[in-house]
Amino acid sequence: MRTVACVLALLGALVVTPTGHAAAAPGGLRFVAPTSRTLAGTTDLKVDAPPGTTAVRFFLDGIALSELTDLYARQTHTDPVWMTATDAGWFPPGAHTLRAEADSPTGTLSTAMPVVTSAPSDGPGIASLDGGWRFTNTRTSSPRTTTPAGTAARSTRSGR
Image (cartoon, rainbow, N blue to C red):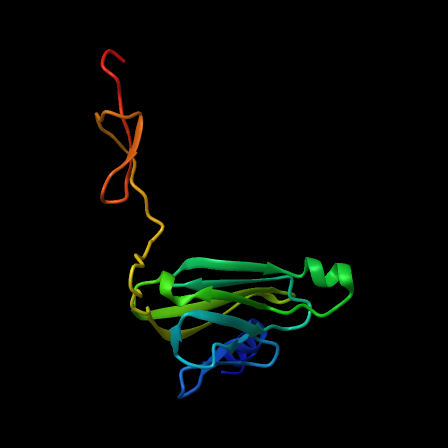
């Protein structure tokens, strides 16, 4: 039992509190923001990390959102701030897992928290773009066109 406790302490094991926020063991990693489980619009992501941490990465459902390094802090002789922002509207509404990883002097630390994203409805005359494009080869009368579905199409000329 004592060996297990020592290993967990060395790894910076995390304890999940009843509110769902990850509380860091001494020298561990913990979320400071968001302070709510519901994410909407532009949302700050911030963690507290142990001294000597060189990088922090944020993920939503395993998709990388951002990676921060301590390079600026080292160059300016300041403490690093492990904070970035994301737009919750980029993700499908519903339940997700927000995760952060940190490269610390004791190894890679990780913490996670459950979140729910919501996307505001589009205003009048606004169409949402999801960033996904599909390119196709089709025959059309002009060299390059955009199809009604928003997909880019390139025409081919006869004999080529």
